Image 1 (tube, rainbow, N blue to C red):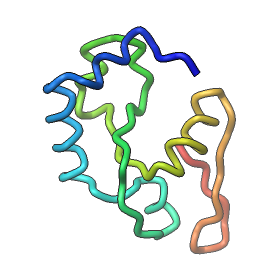
Image 2 (image 1 turned 90 degrees about the horizontal axis):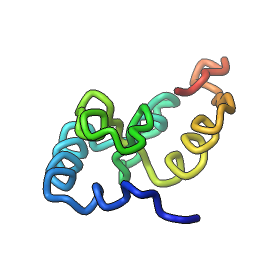
Image 3 (image 1 turned 90 degrees about the vertical axis):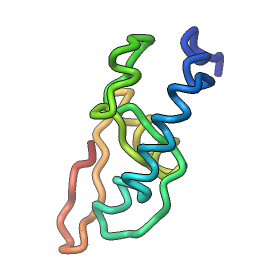
Image 4 (image 1 turned 120 degrees about the vertical axis):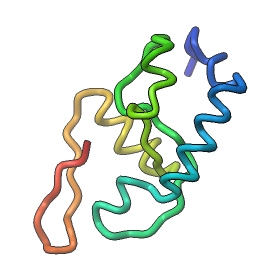
Length: 97
């Protein structure tokens, strides 16, 4: 997969500080917590794709902490318009996203 034209933004000091802060505030994967699974987050993800928009890129309210598994699977499906659901602890499906 080719790197995006805005990939360089992830190398900036500002992003690294923002990422570190996000993981300190929310150290667990938000998708895992839906099913009460306690998993450390490794990825700071943009809830809404920023597509190079600096304001959206640096907006802390647009960030979520995810484990690599959910970032690379469920979140990618959602970004491509797919619905993703998991079975909650009560046995009912929960739509993610």
